[in-house]
Amino acid sequence: MKRVYICSPLGGDVRMHIAQAKKYALYALKCGMAPVVPHFYALILDDDRPEERKLGKQAGISLLWVCDEMWVFGEEITSGMEEELRLGKNLNLPVRYIDDRQIH
Image (cartoon, rainbow, N blue to C red):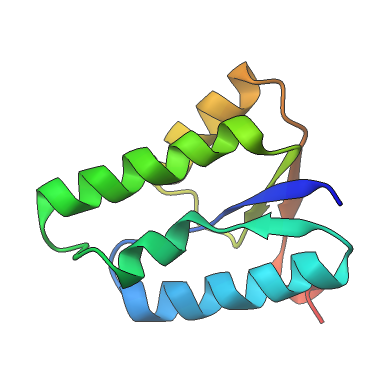
């Protein structure tokens, strides 16, 4: 099973974004992929505390090294997602953009 990095917003409404990440992870599983979901660090770290947010971002982005692909969800590309996309491109990961309307 290939590993796919789930790239979608997290900051701001963290609770809503984690709920969306769960939906995206389920979609990836149904597509036969093993989702790698960095958003789940926000369940154990406080995203409102800059040092914990930084730690979570570092841990999440380190997961890109073990992924086979990156899937970008939603219409918004945040600065954190841009950072993930840059590293993904440097690692030559295939990137797929998925609109919420494609998810069933």
